[in-house]
Image 1 (cartoon, rainbow, N blue to C red):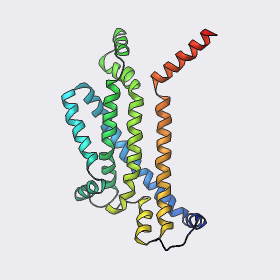
Image 2 (image 1 turned 45 degrees about the vertical axis):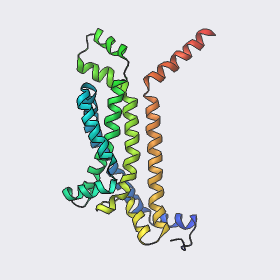
Image 3 (image 1 turned 135 degrees about the vertical axis):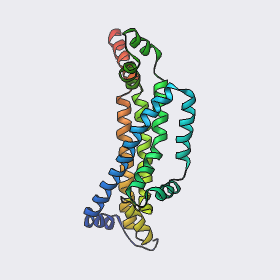
Image 4 (image 1 turned 90 degrees about the vertical axis):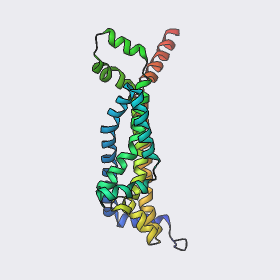
Length: 231
């Protein structure tokens, strides 16, 4: 590959000629990531809520999710392949398992960090436990949940690039075709969009996290009010 003479113009030309194929790989990559993270949210948030209500159970659940994330991604996908066979299902389940830990842990931490005065105020208004969870505690914990989702998304986008090794598709197919064929154009045509996708996801979720930070908005609003009063 080091002897292959190429330039940025060659790369752009290759991507232009194969835009249809690359776009199909990109969409497949995004769909796999969204499916894995969507399932992780559906399972992880309830587990995080459960952890916040039972400390003994929290230690067990968090230990399991931590162990899942420690397992090398390729080894995990190969083990899952024994159950689900070659294909996208194995990849999606792998992304689900890899995304669980940050979502469960951040949901748990976020709920634990909610200021008790808000909960007491809700109780004073006659709210039930379920109302306190969905109208007070969970909305205040959302920045932590989004932070976990942010981490999970970046991890999932990276792990999805090895999908071709277990029969999946996505941008990883171009990356491995480039490696096997000693063709840097194909390698970078897959790697660059995958890297940009991870960066964009990180930025989007970072903005969402700041927008949903109730405490930061409150302190900023208080600072502006104090400044206005002093004038």
